[in-house]
Picture (tube, rainbow, N blue to C red):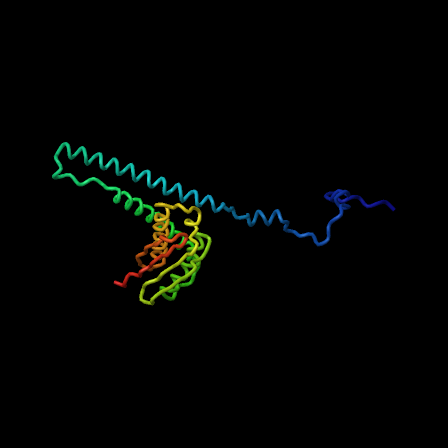
Amino acid sequence: MDAPAPLPHALPSTLLAAPTRAGAPLVTSAVLELANPPQKQVARVCYHLLAVEMIRSIEASTSYRVRRSNDTVAQLAQADGAAHVPPPLTSEDEQEMVRARVEAIGMHLGAGIAARLSRNKLRFNDTLDVIKFLCKDVWNALWDKQIDNLRTNHKGVFVLQDKAFRPLCADKDLGSYGALQGAFAAGAVRGALDTLGVRATTTADVTSPPLCVLHVRIAPAP
């Protein structure tokens, strides 16, 4: 009896004879890594260096603006007399300009982080829930830790304490840097609250580093 003719599209005998592993996963670790790529992380020191350079840049640019403004005032005084010329900017004016710019950057960052973190959150019940969310989620996203202590008089005034505020832990001789980091934190809190529908005024006390105390006063409803 003749042998049967081979099928026209049969697999080669070498592949048919190749051994297979029983129970081998269909999705390998390489495929899983492509589907869920690892998150990229940045060392904490990079954030600290960025904050230092940000403040230095703001101080330098503000100092240049003040010099330009005072030069213009001096030229106007020579041309038209001092009667119609505004007074030159002082060092206190320059410090306030720097503080306002740093606080504005903090507000922008705090607002963006609060908007992103609260995207999938349920509606907050009251202002206290918003403050708790700020102390846990927003503050942790900014400085990798939660607020240590929260107090309130239940009349619209809240006191937030971070006993080891990271920007104040790096150096002992902080100078104006500590006060500006406090302004940045106050701006971040205010921006986050504004995004979450709570109008408030915020001030920071960093006179006892590394302790940072934030005072939040909720604005009365119109």
